[in-house]
Length: 111
Length: 115
Image 1: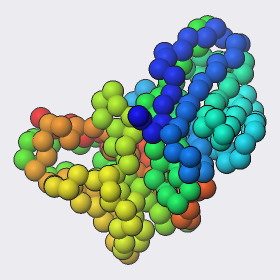
Image 2: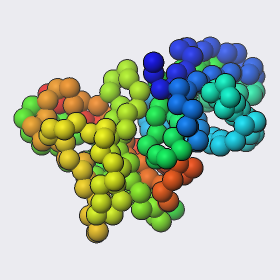
Image 3: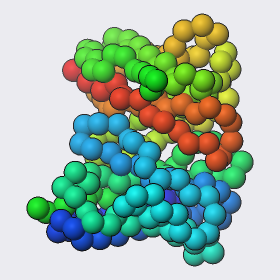
Image 4: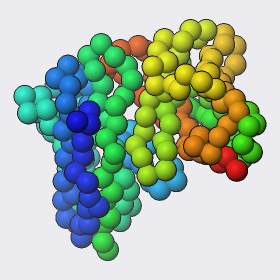
């Protein structure tokens, strides 16, 4: 079983719609959760971090964490063509510092 | 306010040569992490360093790979006797403090091609 799994995608959404990305993790000791955006040929860019259960909003992005279900999600509201990228879910264990990444979900926003 | 810097951005080596990848963390950051992204694969942790110390190298191949972060100068990831399977993007990330809550910020990466 992979440590961090993401819905495989690719995910295609029309401009202005909500893109919903899901991520599950296997280690119950995981403490910190991050979403990175990676454009093709570029490096990962941190867009959200979440540490406690519930929702965290930042602009058009909302991260949701449910530790009991070992589930973290990212919602992108009012999707724009510039949101077209691969989104990486990353998880950090309580006593650790290295990030475990999911394989990523590629999002395409159709104009 | 400069971010994480890596050089070179692109590196081409022939099989059997050595590759040296450099990383300068963000100002104020003393924790450096190296990750590798193979084509069509996810990011994988390789090594975590602080100044003059390797803290965790559990993700680094046992042979041919080494890393350092000297007191002065950038962190260096060294790959000896490269093989075609080493072709990948190598990313360095840095964080200001130790601990699981700390966000890691990535550099632009070095894309290594082994001919």
